[in-house]
Image (tube, rainbow, N blue to C red; front, side, top):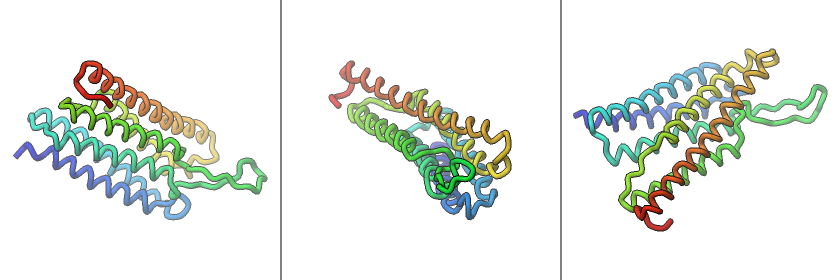
Length: 220
């Protein structure tokens, strides 16, 4: 009976991802911008994070780790993280304002601080690791997550929660002295996410390189 619980939790996280994205899809900063949407999305994402911890912990504790969970778990993580950043760079979080007081020309930006190029970096890393995992496991080598990947997931998740909070409470501190500091903090989290994502990708590259030099996998 216990062996199915971790996979059920992973499946629940996929359902929570759908609910989370439904809130992000319906929300519009200058439109359907009711704080209730992002507050609820925040809670849903937190619950998804708890299930992410629980499914791995229970699988190890009950010694029911399997290939299905090893594939499904990172897949759901990728859906949650990449989907979040894609939404953050999208039209629902666009804000238009003048660059300087008195200007007529409007500058359009995302209130989340996430640019499409950042999403490309995150997506490129995930595609790279997926390819490397396929190469390693085709050679009979287990290619589970390394600590760099776990750290990346933590940083990405914290950044998602920071961005949700920033957008939700932006009207409250917009134009105050706190706006600059909170914006810097938001941007710092986002750039840290990009840096850690790239670093973790390099870590996986080095791992495959080591396996290749040891003759454990064939040529890429």
